[in-house]
Length: 166
Image (cartoon, helix red, strand yellow):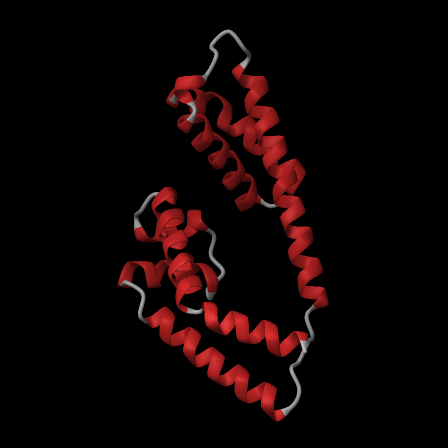
């Protein structure tokens, strides 16, 4: 498996970069495809072209990344620039405090990884390098943090939906 990585990584990275126009996103795309390949290594048909599979998988992954960026941009454009009114400000302050308290209650490593990702806007690969961990460990810890926060903050989400839909 390592020989495939050594052989195809550079070409796949250049290909992903031509689609995404971002070096980190391109590296993440190629790494994600190789992670998937590793997970499916027992099911690989050696008679088929692995090179063609890798390029198609990187292409599809890049399209998904671009689609995700478009959705994020559309979502941010739809969000109001500023919340007005005293009641909204009070709800916002209380909600922010509660969210920050729940983040502070996370396990130390989980909290560190979450804050680097969400507040410092670092990519998983950057965090992994900085902390000397694998990208998979970062992904697992982020999933754990989001799952915990979603559970602990579910009532806030319901209240916010009710407030903004009324």
